[in-house]
Image (cartoon, rainbow, N blue to C red; front, side):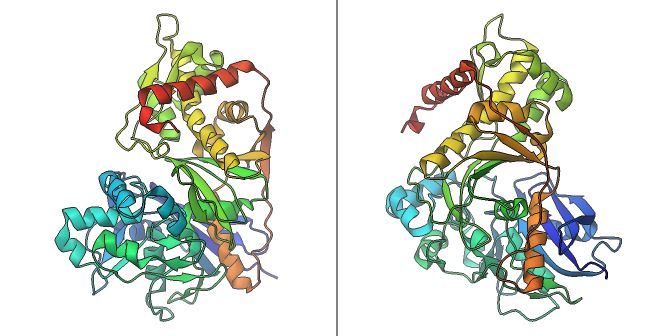
Length: 472
């Protein structure tokens, strides 16, 4: 008997990845990929073009169901005719930082936002981008008839010509990143949306976990889809005690929780997950590209950067990098730049610079692990994913700086796999997603060395010195 096939789509900041899997086991049978423009605002048609390219040459032949995992927060606005009004502003477009601050102040402060939506909105959140649109492009704002996120828009495009749908659709996980949806109540907050945009546009219908969105024109069943981090959690099959650190364009730290998490400091976004629970998450703008920038500075490739960093002792000879090369989301410093302290004639070596780049990137994410623990997440181990997890040095430094064992799952497209697992769930009609196994490459245990605590302490001291506004 031949396997039933499902597909998962990861439409990320940089590319579209598609995997076709055995619905019963999750085994990847074939895959495709296409790149996106390198920008912080992109017309959604470019995502559709990339999806068409990635699924060319019959990639989806025999597939019975599919779902989309998409980059969170992006703002897609359309008019009454369903036409996109302007290029989508992506999550990493920070132009709406002033609007984020104004909205928080106008609508009750951080505590009120956390109580209403689970998160304190920063410049990444859709609600702040809509306020920017209203202030800077009022004609465009007035024409907005509907607002979608990237995965919502792609799901609607997949459904066009298939089974009729009353409106675009989304899920709790994706909606919880807008700034106008409550993951605790499962309802939109139309007042906050009105205060942001000036009116209440059409919004995607929120589907439940495992609920079908409809069918494509070719008859494929379409799942509700979800945000990229929620899809990654589904793809990894998170268990209690698991904390994920994902090292891609952005850095994220998250884990599953049975109860909503409210953090008025804004460090933790109180998202929903893709299975009916919650996914508290800390996000940094700067992750793997910190290492790319350091390698370019030193004129080496990433393998050589890791080799150089391995030659240096923990602490990088006293160098401390604050890796805010693209501004920063956590801590909330959208206009910040990177800084390097501790330079002396003896410390300023290629090896120490390479080590400082690794430690700076990972110190910021280790702070995120601490925030989740403080919020009640029971952390037993770290699952390290994303491109930078393949480094021969990153897993060990992560273990040393977090004090937790680090497991690197076998290389895979876990956002796309999570979307495929959701598609298999919808196809089965079961109450829970299918049990797919996740293999791991290896485990790194933290090493007992007081220098690791010194690295963390020096990093915190430098943040407080350069950015005193972040002090608690």
